[in-house]
Length: 64
Image (tube, rainbow, N blue to C red; front, side, top):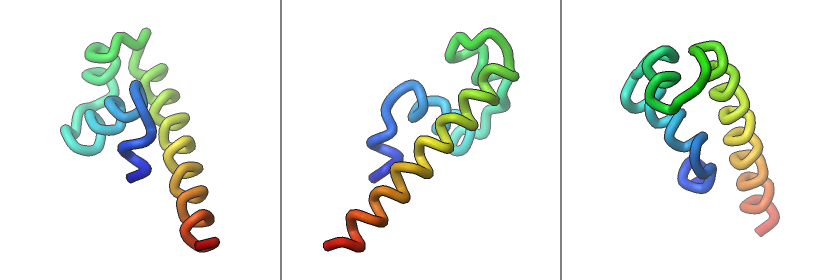
């Protein structure tokens, strides 16, 4: 559920990396990032955002 809620471009970037097994150069070209380092940095930020959503989801489910 959290992965569906993350929104674009994070959803697309993580999908390309983890499900389609594309490398950062391919992702950079497909999503229009300046270079593979920029894509890598964005992936890190997206993963942090996803972790935060998962943590928030756990807390809200625990409170129920």
